[in-house]
Image (cartoon, rainbow, N blue to C red; front, side, top):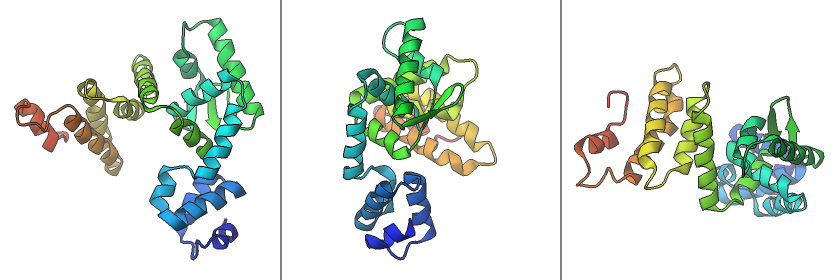
Length: 239
């Protein structure tokens, strides 16, 4: 990684930037080179949030060469994150959930594994490279992506055992002006729960999402309900 970074002018290479290149590329030389170029030209923040154009084109071509069902499965999995439960992918698959649906999803997973894009355990899949996941995710049209996040949130909420942070993540990413209030009922409790732990700092992203959701819901408007306007400026555990 250091040699490649030096070759594209990213030098000296500090520890945070080295960690960024390692974590985002898993050491793949092509990925390292293109991401190092992006860091050198636009800074580490941009490299953390986006996929270099050359890498994205290569990865999307690989995905496009796969069977349509496999490409569709990869998009659903990308919305879930780098890891996804197989049962969740089956539940998200369009149409009725039945044995045939499960077979289609499992066949699609097998194809992606053979293509070197995924690895599997008994009940989960994992993208072999985070850049593959990000490229697949970014290629989903915004409206469709939001609706898949909404469906994912609803499925996870229906389960007896679920991760509040994971549900809050999907609630924030699926919210619009008509669903912001419902998203708040998920995001604010998750922020409060995280804030009550020893890892208070981890709640910051959730609090920021909560404020944005209040604004999205119009709670910053002068005619908004007083309680909603108060919650916008004081969305903490005491609100």
